[in-house]
Structures are given as C-alpha cells and as structure tokens.
Length: 257
Image (cartoon, rainbow, N blue to C red; front, side, top):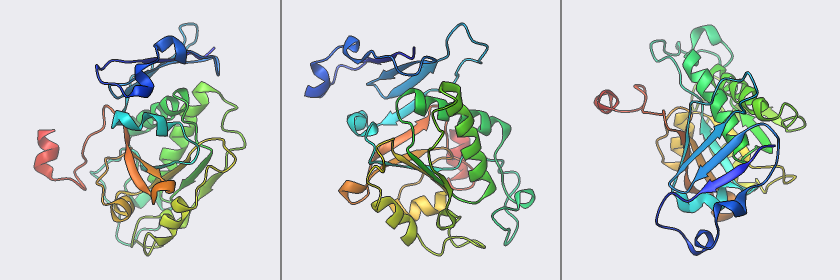
C-alpha cells in the first residue's frame, strides 16, 4: 500500500508539528507509491521496486512550509502556468488557441516533467477534485501529461473528476483569448471545495496569472490560492528543476540561472 511519511528536517516547527512524530503520519492509501514530505519544503515519491515504472526523478518544492496545513484542503485553488515549452518557436500572429502547428508547444522534457508533477501531487494527497484548463495547445498538453502521471498512482483515481476547457483561461488579450481576468477571478472566488474530492486545479498562462495575482511564475509553477481569504496567495508549488524562461524573465537572469 502507499505509505505517507512526513519527515521533520528543520529545527523550526509550529506547535502543531512539534508535538508529532513521523510515525503519526504513516497511513495506507493507494498501494503503489511511497511519498516523503519534508518540512524543509520538499515532497518526493518513490515507485515500488516490484514494478517496471521508471523512478521519479523530480522533487516537488513548496514554500513557505508554514502553509503545509492548507495544502490538503479541498477548498483551495491550485493556479498553474502550463508546463515548459520550446521558446525557439514563438506563437504566430493571431494564432488560434487550437492551432498547435503555429504556436509554442511543450518540449518532450517538459511533458515528462509534467507527468512527474501529476504523480507527485497525487502521491502527496493533493488530488484535484476539479480541473479547468485553457484551450491553448500547451495547456492541453500539460493537462494530458499530468493526468498520465496521476494514473501512475491509481488508474481509477481521476475517473469522475470534472475536467473542463475554459475559454476565459485562454491567453489574455490574444485571438480568442480572455479579454480580462474577471471570469477567472470569479471562478476562483466561487470555489468552495465542491464535493470534497480535492482542490480545483486551473491551468492557464503567465500573463493571466500575473494580472490576477501580481506574481511572476515559472512554467509549470503552481500558486496556492485561498478563496476564503479573498483569493490570497498562500505560497507556491514547483518542481525543483523549474527555472525562469526567456520569454517572461530577464535574459541575463535566465543566463545566470
């Protein structure tokens, strides 16, 4: 069975965590992957030795670690930018959201990373209860890759979870794009946990997220939003391999990184 283990790797702990040991957090759930959640801010998952699955190379980072309690609430929103893309090919002028041949799409490495992101989320008990994604090809590719990764944990887990394409999450001010973030803000504000099956995952774009939150996010990065606190950003989740891209960050910073 899937074992959940929390290891306290820092000397700082809130009163809630200071009173418990890792043994208190061991529980069987799905029967496939061992996950380790570290209060220093990292989550991992290990495939069982008796399967042919490739090992999980990625580590999921979260900051600040004080938001750990909130990560497992059903009524939070995981606001995500699509996964890593090939910046050598830019979107054609006025390209349609579904015209994959004339827009920037995900790299093969990016798709593998998003598969592992899906695995890490589910293995660490953050299975989405609803998924909403932009029509754009890179967002749909991100969604498909993450669902594949989630299926590695349990191929039946995502059955019945609503998966929707939402035009108001399309690239802001582009052809057939969202005219503003009003509808996206309302979508997030109205999320109350649904049927209690997990948080809502929204896969959109850098420009939309920046306009909505004033945060600059890497490709594949997730902001944790709390609708109960006026859509406050509680923190972020992103793969340890994540880094700034040449499209939205200073090229000198990207080069130095």
